View 1 (cartoon, rainbow, N blue to C red):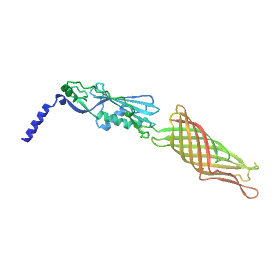
View 2: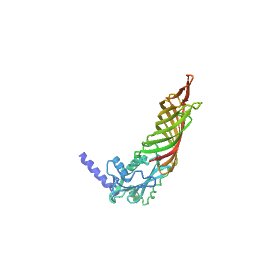
View 3: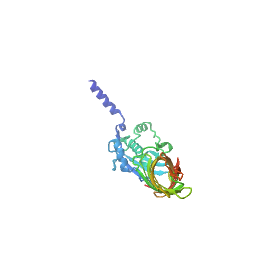
View 4: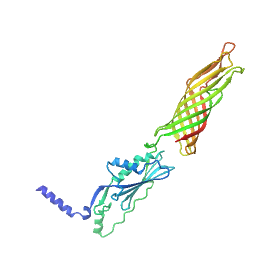
Length: 355
């Protein structure tokens, strides 16, 4: 009997509720998605990728291309000196503006926006939408209609959501991982002027190859050559020729600048093959000496055209293995001809191509 009474009371309450309340249900929204990419955003996420990322989060189909979609989501991607920006606009199927939101990041690649953008769109699409069963339109004021009818006064019109201002901008940190950021590569060719490993100021040439993985410091390999330098004794009757071949590896964790000028800082090591060939002595010998050094390098690149840049750098090296070269004099003593300096320095200037 108690169960029967409860059913009867529930039925009476349902009959007494306003008719409009019976016409309202809550459903998960489906949407049409439009992604527009402005100049400089060609590498940003497209509509297909964004749909896939959102639906993976929601574990359901959230987007439709037909008229059954209840929402329209528009994403406008742009690039400026401030960084990459995504402006989102949410509208009902009728065209009524429901809200705006913006995402901004100063990260070097726009894929740093991917995760945040997919999350915001997923929250917008998955938010429960009050829908009038009779019309199928989103209805956010269903409970106000009976009150208006009862009071005889029309409710004040609901103001449109404001345009996104500074407070409505979500700032994505600059160091957010850019998951689709590609590897960057570079090759360089430079002329050298080196002091320390050979007698005097030695000219030379260097080739370099660099690679930068996403979210990691760039790595650079270089190979340099200093052609033979001639050094004679004081009487100029004899002497030696010095030449150097060098291989080095650098890691460049310091990087500043954008646009035309870019500064970098590197640390690494080098291994050199110093060859010495004597001449003018009774016994002319040739020897090879290995030179292992720790190095620090700093420099800048200046963009010229397309992938081509000018590169200027200064490098200091600390030899851990130094060579001392001596010769025997007529009186039987050993005299020094040349000794590698405790600290060597190199200036280079050349061209760099990056892609």
